[in-house]
Image (cartoon, rainbow, N blue to C red):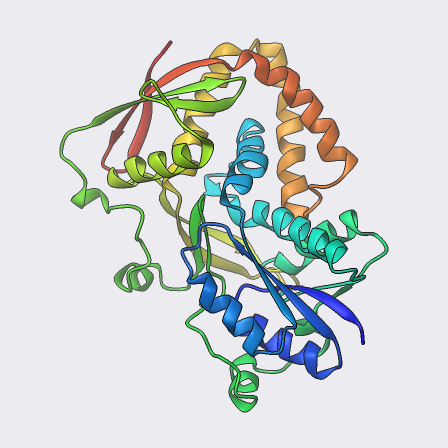
Length: 346
């Protein structure tokens, strides 16, 4: 029997993928990660075991996600792409890393995921998995065994759990993102939970100071914090002032040029992106900033392609490690009804 490790979020799509793999004769081990999505992960684990998994690993990787993935992206000005948060893309690298690590523990040479090709998620996961485990076989059940099948109907026919998951929604400590053709309807349905609308924000501006050390945020208003606490605190503060709401369009994979609208909220990503960019522009010499710009663009491309675990990203990191030595200082920001601006440096 082939032993296989499946990246399992608990969604209906993943339940269908798990069922397809187990009925084909695979011994499936699942990996579920807590990235800050606030799911009941014990229930997700029970769902995996009830769906046929022989073992179900559930890992809290929030701190690792922030420290080893999000903050390095922030240093490369890749915390957002053209004003939209990039956490969903960055998360795929960590998911791949954990699946490959568990596969090593489980002596498995087959990997799988329940992602779709529509938003590029499947391609990013597969690229990252193959970078880490070039000799492993990577399976995509939704594209292989279930291609052209309506997943909800398949789940119902096979008595699989049909969850409340929404196609195109991603939630983690960095952001909430959802594909939609009706942004106003999404807002009415309660999508925004981390940020207030501008009309509901305080009528007086708030002042906030963030201290960076070598490009990494270390203190808020003079108080040092562990990375996850810092991210959570800034998310709460920025969200209370309506920071980080917006929409963007994303070109669909093999979509014939069609672009899918998304709505997002990312208070902490927006706040830190503004603070880091402004402080970096103030402190670094013009020629170093100019040299770093193509490196930043290359990191953004690496993230978008799922090429995090490659020599290209490692080489970029070496450059950024040197350039960010000069990004040490404090930036003062004013937050007011959805806007964020720098007012002073120290």
